[in-house]
Structures are given as structure tokens and as C-alpha cells.
Length: 164
Image (cartoon, rainbow, N blue to C red):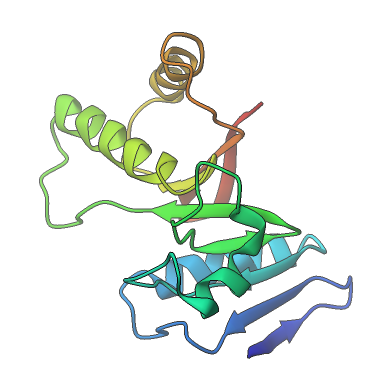
């Protein structure tokens, strides 16, 4: 069952699947991402995580559009107008004052996110945009990774960094 959380005058809406754990540590961040898209008139759906995916009838209904993709068996965080997105953050307790740690953190969250979807939203960990673009370029052109969109989530909202 899916609940309509809010609908904006422009037609954008946020829906939440009833199995979503709203007490999860990243729920408010995922919700904020969906709110950003819904305010642009897009339809968003926050989806649950499953321990067992393949053979789970509920999973197969919710994530049916992932079938025949590399993401079948994964649980991206939400869907925007039929496109799946993964939100990734980092451990706020880690010391990110060192530039190498920020770069390592960025690479780690990129890697984790790209296992779930080719559209990812990353918490801004303080790396430069030129580093991000170089990292994405290397992943796309030298490692043949499929990346459609990359956003940074900042205190002022989402910032599109890369679009295929």
C-alpha cells in the first residue's frame, strides 16, 4: 500500500510505501530529496529496503521496473517519475578535515551508490567540483560505469553536478 504524503499545486507529490521505516537514520534526508523533486512538479515514491529481495513478492511488485537491469535485487531509496535514485551519506563522526579523507569518502559513497542506481545523490563531503567531475569522467570513460546523474545534497538543497 502506498500513502500520499503531500501534493503540491503544480502536481508534484511525495508518496511513501507503507513498509518504509520512517525512523531510519536517512529517512529525513531521503524525504528532503523527494521534496526537492516534488516541488518541481515531479512524482516521487519513497520505497522500503528488503533483506531478501529475489523471490519476495512485495519486492517484485515495488521494484518491477528494475527487472532486466543490473539493479534487479537492489533497493534504491526512491523513484522520481519512473527513474530510480539512491541517496548516500557518510559517517558524520569521521574526521573529514583532511583533503585525502574527503576524497576517499567521496569515492566510497559513489561506489556504494552506483551499486543501487545510476542516478545518485551524495551528501556534500567538501570535495571540489573539479575533483567530482574528474572522478565521474574516469568512472564513465575508463571504467565503463553507467552514471546518468549525480547530485550533491547541500544545506540549500540539491545541486546537479553531472548529467549524462
